[in-house]
Length: 112
Image (cartoon, rainbow, N blue to C red):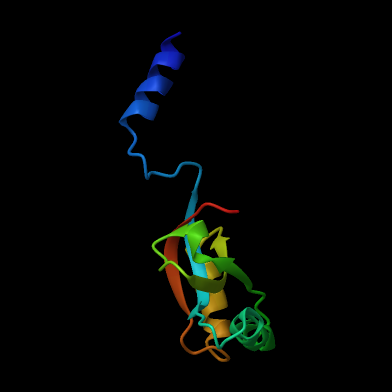
């Protein structure tokens, strides 16, 4: 009974816009891309993926809605979350030879 009361308290106090169940971690952001009507999603996503692959880094595309802190309508092309800062920094050094604007960001990821 004690746990049920605690759970109901959390649900009542949490703001309506709060999302639960996310995973916080360090992400390698190869490119946050914004598309428009003239640019196909395939072009937006495939160029950074191809450039990263040249440096031996596998990245995927993620809609901004899967993260906190990414502008709506943006496609994040990157990798993560990393198990350690050291591993993320190692991949950042590698990918910057092919994608100079790549960076690391601490993000909250909510998946699909």
